Image (cartoon, rainbow over all chains, first blue to last red; front, side):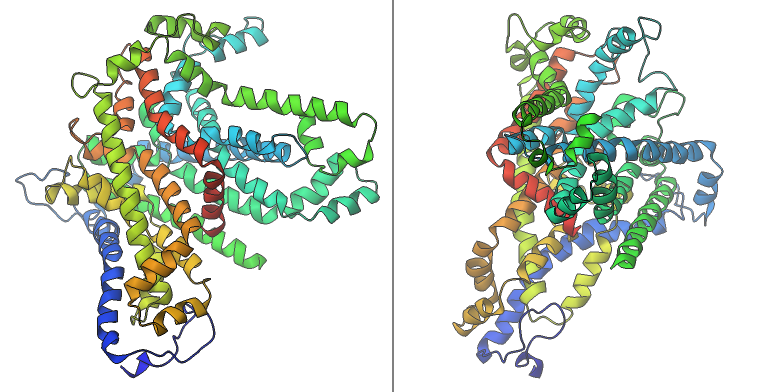
Length: 317
Length: 297
């Protein structure tokens, strides 16, 4: 109780340490009230985030089914992990999602940066354009799938028309989402289109933080637009680049919705992803133990990427 | 590509004085064309939703006829905006709105209350709770949904609204966002309220909440978009039309040999419109929300 009268300790309490005047009867009531304010959120997070997360480690060591069977659940040790790591389909899913990440990073971030540069200049109706370019980012992925599956339509969709026109009819028509070669690049394209808006506004914020004087100095030194871009803009955006790359990588590794809707992981497993593999194992095949093991591997990947971010950002400070 | 490189020079216009006007117009037109090409898929969606013939939609897609509609009709919407039948998209839309409303309202309230106690409360162990929350923030939704599904089914909450609202209301990320805002409130404001003898909840409700509308709007927008676009979780947890949201409803068009494109387009517009209206009304808030989630996340 004596701590009540002392100033609030710790970094969480702002301001200077000043003696607080409080009336005694309020103290207990106040504490209870605070508890009542903190607990609802914490209880929900405990039930719906912490408990499932911790239990996934336990479930992963068993052969538990999603809908329990009369047969008792058996402890299988690391059997699930062993089964996953020896399953070629898992390695293909891991490779696919890695390939997706490698492809989507330059496409999505490059496009976002290009549009951000375009919007960062003196331009009439700049806010209007920013709003327009941000539209895909607020469009639900499900809706994006509806639109883009008609764009990818075989054999007469717009993409096939454009390809046919540009190559004088020599190439195509291509079954974009049904061809093992083209399914993943098609998913990359529509994913990048849906999501680039976020990276765009992050880059815009980064660009606006670059002091104008840097450009003026470069210009006095006779640097042309290209040189100013490579020697002023790009180095100044270093922190933004790192942030954007990490966020995009984490997003990319969770790829699921568009694959589930458009290709179901096909054709021939070329668009199967980690989350889709987990979904199939746990929900479709009801093998909860196996799926939990995949979930843990997914968590570890996200954890490693996040730690890399912490490490790189701290290194810079 | 040339537009991109010149874009990196905000001060370029000052150097060339004579052809500046022409250059500015060319630049403006170029940006306009790029913008129209980039958002054209959305435009096509709205046009296609007004064409009642599903075969016509596909036939038009490959040509410039995709950009206009000769006899616009709302028939597609009339067909699916129902509460029963094979495609009850009226019901799906209402379900989505119920889930959205409850999640956002509850989420803003619970998260800000918890953030207030973490920032200004006197409970012992606040630092531990805060550290724990930051640690949990890293856990992706995707890696907990299957154990959560098993839990929810055991609790008898499968195929319910509660199962789609309760798990995502409270969130470490949003508690942390609001917390960071609260700790920047000057200490004098808190002190003045305590001297008056106000209880913690009263200080939160009548002093801190009115001060923090920007961050509350940010959380409402981010949580709202997230809730509206949920797919994986409702796909698994809903088994009937009873609580099924519109995202899962639209996805059910796929996986058949012939897709009813006219209905799918209309349903997509139904899902898109509420967000679009909200976005047009609060565009500035949307963009700044996403920025603050980026800077602080």
